[in-house]
Image: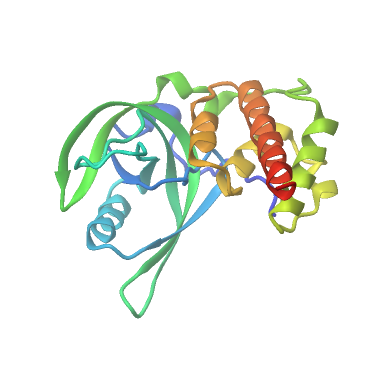
Length: 223
């Protein structure tokens, strides 16, 4: 697992975040601030979305759909996470491989008419301004020994490789954002991390998700 990323000088200032945003509804997928999310784009409407985003502000909102609904358009959660396209490659078979780097989360103020098949919203960034200027310093966000013990057990149970000792040397706030993006967590658990405004709440929510997953795996193994 790579180190959390520093915020790029190419990213917009908070006051320059876009007033409208294309959204990509995808279950179990979020892009938290300063984390990277690789995407494989192949549906025509989302190819259009990427083309248009590249021509304007390079930003896309990842929003999870609500589960259990068959209505169209598919209802989505009211809070999403936006990323900026920081890598882009076209393939010979008509796909686009890209990387989104997380910028800021947002509330959906309203949904606009779709364009070229993809959906757009009016984002309200204000509640998540801390994604830009949050500084936890030496503030203990969570019991770190307990956190990394749970992380190591989670990774082992899922046959995932990572140097947990190296991860312990990283700032916990950005690391939590990275883990929330890349770990195979339940969609509801990922949404809880997106909606947790403050760093301490995110760290505690991630710890709870890791421990619950370990407990569930242990219970399954006993049956």
